[in-house]
Image 1 (spheres, rainbow, N blue to C red):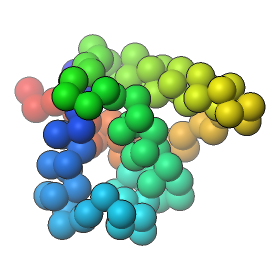
Image 2: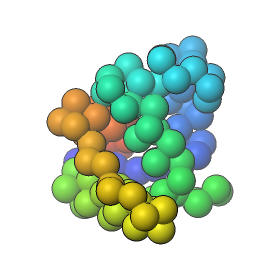
Image 3: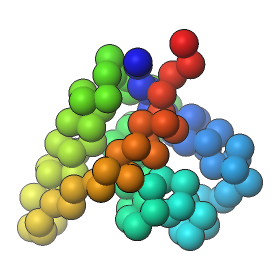
Length: 99
């Protein structure tokens, strides 16, 4: 299964659920519950505006997300967060490309 990420895709995902970018509670639930809004923001930061990132499999996608989290946490001199299994499952479902 392939996965892709773009700002456009994130906007479509939110719109399909009737959510706006500031709806922290709704985005939390959509992106796996606790810290879902945090990981949504991480995805937005990971992908440059106007570009599409893609991965061949879930492992590559999760590794890219975690690498971005690790780098930004290091810049901020903070401990990096790790997405929960629920966050990963939700992100994988949302970013999976149709066959």
